[in-house]
Image (tube, rainbow, N blue to C red):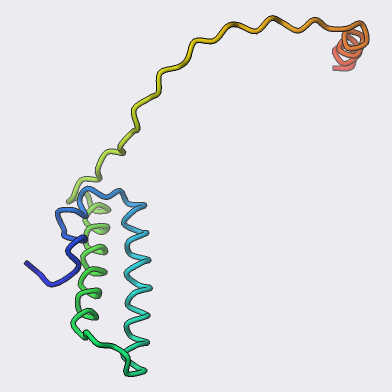
Length: 111
């Protein structure tokens, strides 16, 4: 298997929706920036991580482009199961006072 993040395998990327892929891409780019910064300051301990993050970014771009071209299917959105509606007693209609009835009548004449 290719070097990269274990959680970003190409099989798993197939199950992600496009919105989540864009989020993962943003995270990977931020991580790459931080790794490059650490490399420039001499604080980076694992240089292989740079290569792995670059491959993750390329893998995400590939999945997005293949979906755009119709090569790879876009997963159907997962819907949460609908909650059962609780039965409630019907509310009694509010009785209008004389003042509010007169105001309603005035509004209907204006319209």
